[in-house]
Length: 133
Image (cartoon, rainbow, N blue to C red; front, side, top):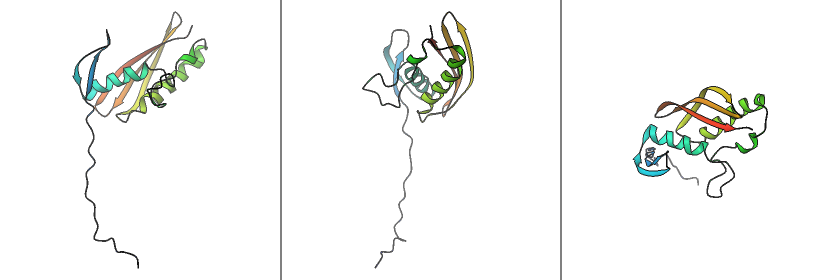
């Protein structure tokens, strides 16, 4: 005989956890207080884009960005690859929905990418520079 489960209902709510975290002073990389919402996401973007993926045992292989192998590569390869890698690295964070509006500049062996990060807390501009020579 198969039991009847019609009377069993489970009521629950999915609650999002706050993104509250310690706030880092970017100039000297010290902890100054706590932050939440868009400031926490900006800090996460900074940390993700400044952590080389697969390099540190403490981080998951899904955390960080691969930039080391772009050194010495030609510009026509670096621009689209940098766009793809930045987008991939940042969208692993559930709070970030998309990365758009990329623009690139090249000066003295360094490529700078400026882009817009779309997150659940709002949109903001971010930048990442990569040495290629």
